[in-house]
Image 1 (cartoon, helix red, strand yellow):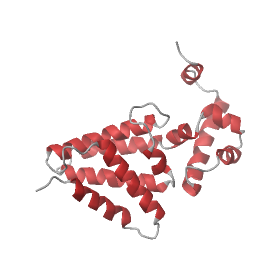
Image 2 (image 1 turned 135 degrees about the vertical axis):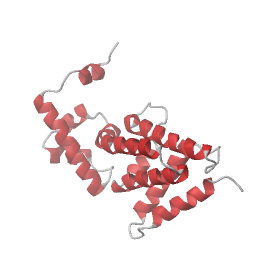
Image 3 (image 1 turned 90 degrees about the vertical axis):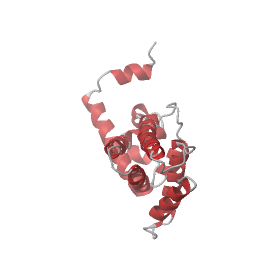
Image 4 (image 1 turned 180 degrees about the vertical axis):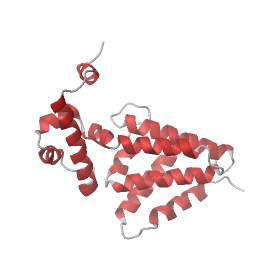
Length: 195
């Protein structure tokens, strides 16, 4: 039996509800860029010209709003992962994708911290973004492992946690433009099999 939320999601939105939904996403993206993902949701609603109840009708939690705002970026990361599956060098492809992931994460202060707590099993509001990204990264990691470039015991969950930690370090050190790349390079050196 479908829940009320599922029935509501299945119905097409009225024009005014669709406008509110899009305006909330636009304002939230701007607010997350300016102030981080922990920005006040009341402020997001006010800036969008709606009540906070309207925000919560569209997005029942902060994580649901974050997921909706970043869905297009997650889709782009997944598409980039698919493109890189054909790259000549599997380890370089993985590194390229991880750089793109870090670049996305540092654009929005606090996003990496939020992503670090996303459940890998698809049971949280961030799943629509995190599960496909995890799958895309997992395919690139597996290819690098088959090529002998990454130790076989390395899991995508560990790699994503390390990548998010690198993004947090870069976020906390905005004056060091090369920090994320240096840390990512060190991480990949540590992931290589022993000689």
